[in-house]
Image (tube, rainbow over all chains, first blue to last red; front, side, top):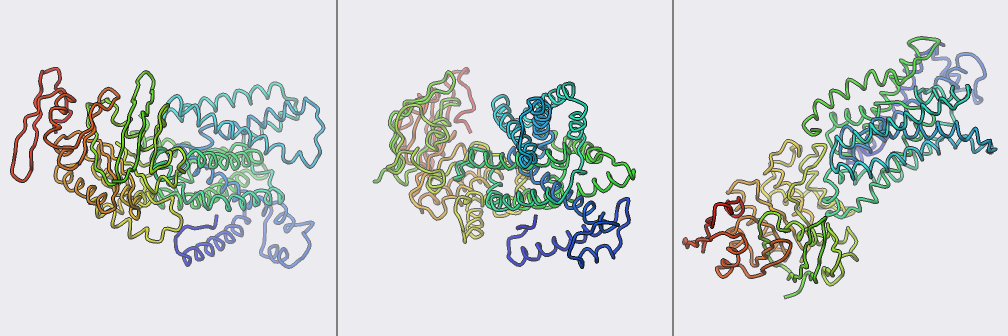
Length: 348
Length: 267
């Protein structure tokens, strides 16, 4: 999240510093909300004591509140990133992994996995189990990405409507398969399944944060180079080839990152819609169309959006939790209609 | 004169339409206009030259090496193409679009100056800070032209391919930009191949005319008065020649029959 918003080195350092400060303030501020009150003392004892707390409000802070907030920030950034990459890839401000069926494809693969794998009775080593869901989600997501790329370009080349309609079809297909799975599922599997259709950050823990952190570090290493050339997609395929870009390789790589991040988000948080749509569009309205700015900014905005939504989700009806998808959809659906209106000329 | 590219019976089938065989040699620094009626295969020929389309048969040598052996970034240092219409999504700023012409060059230290000079050459320096989506058709064409200029700015003996560059410009700009393109190419010894619809522009600004009809090259000649009969055959029009001092011979097309009335060549 903290890379290159401006060209100069000073600007870069300043931006990194400011976002770090902003990040810490965000953390402290949002940790105040919740069923258990967090006081300044809890923060101090957290910093001072060497061992992790076992009881009281500092336990809540360390084991529940902090990982939850960090997780919301990370997942929000992942959703914002995959949204920005998808929009750049398809040259279209309406493209979003949720709308195009990528998230649904991931959820569908996980659902199939839960029901079918469980019935096959294969014994899987415990340490692998943790990775099966994300691996399944990734393969579902990447499958949908490739289908989208192929089908949308084959049936309706260069048409935004064609792309979105293909997305609708894939969404419906994935929903049907998930629905089918709920009939085949046992009660316990059903509980797992509903999680994917609702979306929730309640599964957060430190291990997942480390996992997504590693993913971000890897992504940062590759995406740094990728982001610099993402603008070339805006020219269209043939011109991009003329200026010397191997567009099919670039497209493949971006697709894999989109699938990785959406797959990751879906496998641990279920389907959270609209963040990937809203964040890049806000970023574009704020900073213009340059992908080198839009991508980091939409990660930032995505994390803020999701953090806000999640804070509402877990505090509005204490002790119960409202599914986070409700808030993102409440915010996102009107926004989507607004976007449709402003880009109506392109669609028809 | 050194050869830049050589096409040996390049042919291609797109759906039911057959194109070629095209055989052609292009010398470094040459200025060639491709003329022909709509749908004759001019753009297809240009796309074969830019390697957008891959020929099914035949050999295409570019600078002594088969075109398929060139890497894309290597090729982009020697060949630039201006498409018929090029939309840019997300309303990128014009200067960013121009700079994208040089994206395959790592660590390009003169990027900013080159963008400005290229923009000046294609009469669009006042548009640099505008979003591409806010520009008119003619302004977009100028920005794309600047992108081409930027792409081959520091290179020599390259190839510039232009598909109807002037269709959406006013007459004053047409003249000015044609002059810029020619001057730019001349300074760097780039060959330039342009699809044009205006016979007079082609004859005044280009050394050589290639006539395309029904997917084949039906004529290849130096531009000048002697090309007029072939041009009449190409468009199936009568060309009336007039001599005006300072302009050289100009042709005025006149339809042979009402059925042949088309917009081609009558700008």
